[in-house]
Length: 299
Image (cartoon, rainbow, N blue to C red):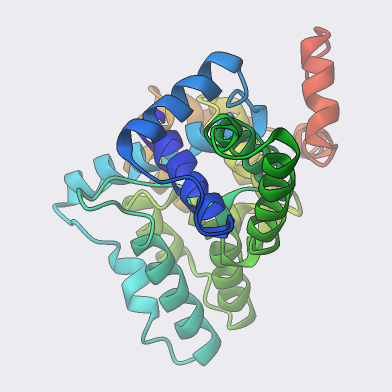
C-alpha cells in the first residue's frame, strides 16, 4: 500500500510540475521523498476513500498472486481468451482492460494505482494536497501570490485531465456489461476467473446480478465473513455448484477457513434473509458507515 501511494503521489507531483510555467519546480527523488514526508506528517494522505482503494488493490493483488501460483499460471488466461471473442465489443473491452492493467505495473512488476483510478472527490483532494506541498519550493523564487496562482492553475489543468472512464474499475465494468449483453457470463467463465483470483471481475458480475453497487459487492467478497459472502452469492442467484467452486478455489484467500460451514450457510439461508442482506447493501455506503460508527450495524 505504501509503495502504491508513494508512486501515485510522485506521479501527481510530476504532472503538476509539468503544468507550471517553465517547469518552475524541478523533479528529483530527494524532493519527492521530502514532499511525501510532509504530506504524511500533515495527515493529508489519510483520505478514507483513497485508503480503502489502496487496501482493496493490495487484497486483489494478494489473492490473484496466490491463486495463479496454485495453478502454475503467471498470466490471466481468462481475460486473454476474451480478446478473441466473437462479439467485437467484448474483444475490445478485454483488450482495453489488459492494456490498462499493464500500465499499472512498475518495472519490477509491482501493482500500481493510476490517477484515473481515483474517484473525483479523492482526485481533487489529492491533487490539491500535492500542490500545497509543492508551494514551499516555489516560494524560493516566486512570491506567495504568484506561487498560489500558478499552482492553482496547474492543479486545474491536471484535474481537467482526470477521466474515470480510463480507470480499472470502469474498464472492468465495461467488459462485464458487454459479456452480459453477449450472454457470455457463463458459470464456466466465472469459475475460471475465480480460479485465477480475478476478484474485481467476479465482484462486477455479482454486483450486476444482485442490483447493488460494485463497491458493496467487493466489500462483502473481501469481508472475511462467510455469511456475508454467501448472502452475496445467494442474492446474485449464483448456483450452488459455482458457490462451492468459489469456496474451493479461493475461499481461504477470502478469509473463509471452513468451506463446509459456509456452503451450509448458503443452503439454509432463507429468501427473507437474502432480501434483508440486499436491503442493507443498497443503502448509501456513507449511511452504513455512519450507522456502524454509532454502533448500529446491519440487522
